[in-house]
Image (tube, rainbow over all chains, first blue to last red; front, side, top):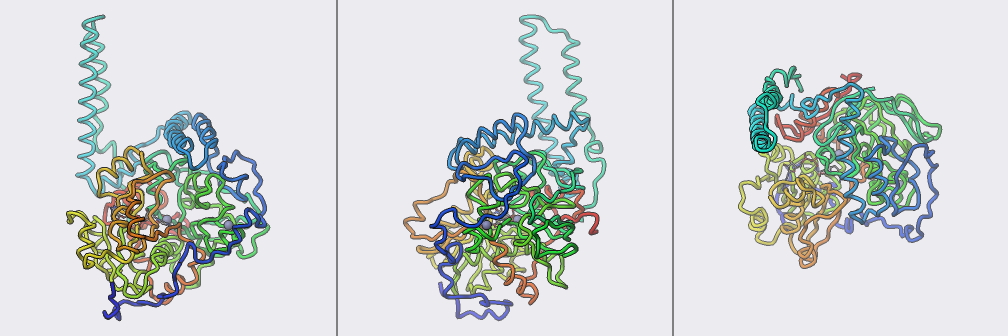
Length: 201
Length: 383
Ligand SMILES: NC(=O)c1ccc[n+]([C@@H]2O[C@H](COP(=O)([O-])OP(=O)(O)OC[C@H]3O[C@@H](n4cnc5c(N)ncnc54)[C@H](O)[C@@H]3O)[C@@H](O)[C@H]2O)c1
Ligand SMILES: [Zn+2]
Ligand SMILES: [Zn+2]
């Protein structure tokens, strides 16, 4: 499509980097063919490997520098080690890693609890901001959540009731306490959930 | 020190973490002055990038002051104000030598398909990032660049990623004077890609998104056409019709794995993780570029597979160019453009948020609340 006849004087800098010879451009532009010589450059000093670093089996070594954030640990760490037996080209690599990520979330909650810290999921999800900028949406989300939970709890307790009355008998008290657990869940006020809405801007 | 702490999909918080250490003779420790949240962080935030470990600190777009340097650091001194490219690159390997600083072979052990990136999961090297008060910066002789005197920190921080990525998206398009360029995505990267397409002499620039306030913004900021795909029956037919039924010369994917617009792609890519994110925008890009045209991809996808019409790439004879931006290579030219007023990056920043409120900032950016385009986190030392 040729649009060059148009006037572009209103666009500051129009065409200042135009370069008819800019083809091929990056990524292939400045090929040196040095890569045909293989892994032959003078490597930077190796960072001491004093933590566990998993490395892709598509390379022979640990890179000269590496990140030291969160080395593999626990069950998720075991899954990650397993994943690194497979190449980046294999589902055997990526699917276990995704699984490990999910297991790691549970480990994170347990770790928090073991330190006496109950994670404030509402704050972590940034729902203070949702409350400030989209209160309607938040109320909707919470309402849907409550509805779904109610439906599930009612369904489950009905099934249980059925079973229990048939086979073992089910005391009213027990059922009552089950309901209590649920009602207490429901009684959070908006204020409890969002104690402080901090200004953002 | 205070640092962002990832706890699981859509759960982040601020925590106390140990001050980072010099681990390698070419390391520097930087006290962060500005740190942005990027569309790339949303892929991590949503739990879509494998090997994103709980406890990691994200953040790959930051500026700061050099606090400490390793024995082999010659190009920086304590007290320098620097902007730090998001790629970690050694400057010595074959790829760095070719200017492919986003593809360094000496900064990521975990994956050979990408170089090291700050705060970007273990798939990109396992480095803690800059959404913190302090951060360790490896290869400090290579990446970090002293901020030119007089440059606004808000401009400087966008030179670490958004500006070079948008510029490279246009550059990889091989735009020739008069070309019609379609940019998918009106996030910070797409906005910058649209703006930079003119610098290469584009004759017509069209941006596609479905968020009205962003379309409005890009229309003014990049002086281009902008259309909402929700108002079209089929964006590919719309683009064909508006290009005399030929298709665009160049299509740019500035959306990546979080794309909306196709239920099939969204369910398989974002909900079930059966593919490496939703490839809707890339699908549209391939199908709406003209035969023999160029598709330039900067949108980020996961490391497995995606549903794209590869048969059409063959049949149309397309060229596909893609990469992580090579920030260091582009910086000299882009600093010039900012200093000469050709580019005005800081206009993209809509939210300045205290580092402590990182969870709210993620949520606002991710959900596009309060007309957010680009949020920047500011540690207390710099407020
Ligand atoms: N290659 C690189 O070096 C590099 C660097 C930075 C960012 N990125 C990637 O670029 C992409 C954009 O980043 P951002 O910060 O602008 O993110 P963003 O999430 O703010 O913007 C993405 C935009 O795309 C829009 N969108 C969603 N589906 C769409 C569709 N089907 N068609 C058109 N638009 C659609 C969204 O509404 C949003 O405005 C991300 O994938 C990010 O990871 C790549
Ligand atoms: Zn980024
Ligand atoms: Zn390198």
